[in-house]
Length: 142
Image 1 (cartoon, rainbow, N blue to C red):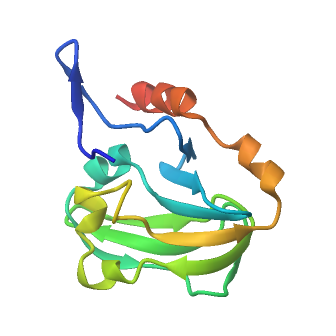
Image 2 (cartoon, rainbow, N blue to C red):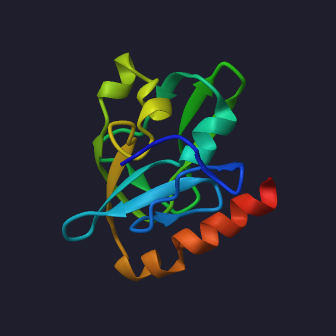
């Protein structure tokens, strides 16, 4: 997926893929097979953070609740918490981020993913923002 802003009517807008779900904390959620979801931060979030220099991720097997802090992203500008968007169990983390945290900046929707969870309640996906609602949220921030 293409990362970085695109131009429309002379203004820069962050990329917001249609097929993903989003949170108000600027995380994206990709539904994978079965009850598995992959999570990362949005193009908008990585732009706001600046150059990412360190990422702390949850541990595989960790039980998480929606809204729980499960890690941190450190950038040249600030340190931000990472939240679990849904209840479940962490099934994978992106080990590549330990050596290459800048993947979050260069490929926020691709190689910059952060972790995966097995969701305990798939119906909770319906409570997340769709692309249109997320675009509205970030337009209000601008």
